[in-house]
Amino acid sequence: MTFIVHASRGEDVTTTIRLSVVVAIAKGLAFVEEGWQVVIIGPDGVRYEPSEFEKLLSLSPALQSRE
Image (cartoon, rainbow, N blue to C red; front, side):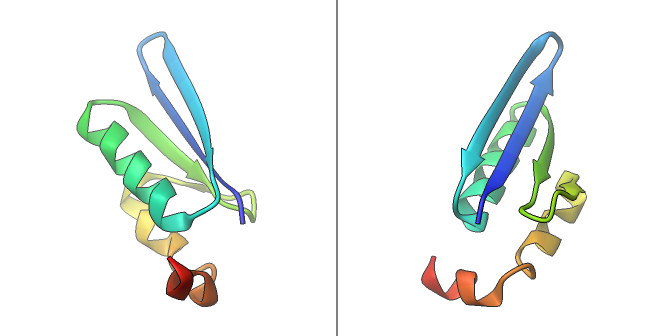
């Protein structure tokens, strides 16, 4: 599964692609701690704000056991 982490701060924008939901959430939270505005786009195309990151974990229970 592919997760896109999109972060912006002022004029700076970065987008990273992660195959692991756990790594995508960790990367997103690291950006949030540094003052970036972050959304993670799940494989379903839905955008998740930081307060919704835990919802990403429910997308694929089988995936969680491999991480």
